[in-house]
Image (cartoon, rainbow, N blue to C red):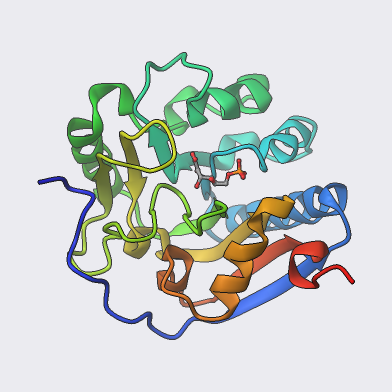
Length: 243
Ligand code: 6PG
């Protein structure tokens, strides 16, 4: 019995998605950067701090690299992760290592404001530890997410538990189809507790996943229902099939 399997998911609640086609990955990066920095300055102005959840995978790497150069008040930034792979902290496939090398190690965010998921503890202990940490955290300001070619997001995989029914904030994933199989993921419900949600979708292998999402297929992104809706920055080629 694994934590990452569940009874069939109920139908998705109403979801409002705004699709923003981008001509190429460079434009997508620029659009993401602009939105992230605007969200940071609005949050800092309104609440004095900016709570952002980072996406893993490859798509955000270039955005994170450019963030190094941003002019912003880094002391207001609080960094969380949407998912993590259960590997040693310095493993090259860790999302926290990628974000560190590309961006976080190069800017003066106070160390105590960077909150990697302690996935090296294994999925069960790490998910419990992160759930305890998040209990003290209110709604996020911005959640960044990617989309996998099979329609997964964070480490919520089609046919697995997305935390829709059981109201868990963090899930232990024991059998992910994308390696490594052991992962930790924020649930769909916890990811949705955010003022803004931004998907970053690039790469031709995502075409079926995008089409499935738009057609209402029962994949994890369909079950994310933040109050303010979802903005999807997507390579235009994925929306408009080539002639
Ligand atoms: C992870 C993820 C995952 C990722 C998508 C897209 O594997 O750690 O967080 O959900 O965002 O698989 O990944 P790419 O950007 O590499 O296509």
